[in-house]
Amino acid sequence: MSETRVTSSETKDLLEMLKHEHARLEGRLDELKSCRYLTSSEYQRLAELKKLKLKTKDRIEFILRRAR
Figure (cartoon, rainbow, N blue to C red):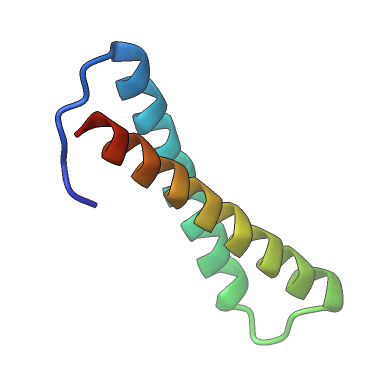
């Protein structure tokens, strides 16, 4: 992600929160991916985490595009 000037402190705070959430989701995904075997519920959780991570990234990109 490219760094862009963001004017509002609320927007900066939101951006930082989203970046933190994205990293947290990435960590959780890595944990599940490192398991040798996954149960069906773990596979389902993996898919949910991937979707959440993508939505979070989309929100970050939206904020950065809007700030340009």
